[in-house]
Image (cartoon, rainbow, N blue to C red; front, top):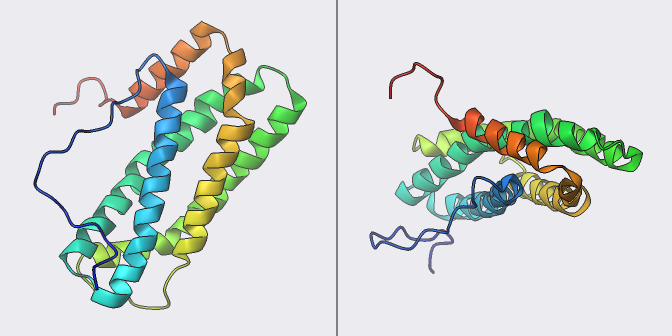
Length: 186
């Protein structure tokens, strides 16, 4: 029976075109596409580990999921919490602000759901058989994808109401958040 994880290939595949930097909303949508991809990978990984153990494929997949949710996802949440949501709150829509409040609280909930999944992935990434009861990977994945869909449906469309300079500042903040500090050497 074939493995539930995709086999790595060594052939070059075209990479998706990145959103333009002057379109911060496209970048936020791209982050949500990665949330979907990496939560699905985590779910396939759980089935794979149950059948195959922490083999090389499992280690590679666990490392990729860990990297996304420990490095990129916190940056994405900061983009929203520290910049987008602040700008949207300035529009003064009470119903929008209530939705933003709920979504920001959910960021904390998602962080709590992530903790046992992260520990499980770390064991696999190190080639160890996971110990303890398996985490609720499906619950984490489902809730995270629903959260992203809710943001896209009920909050992101309001970005069209923001003036161009505010969107430019959002894009600049996103770039700065991902850039090395000034004076650091690579």
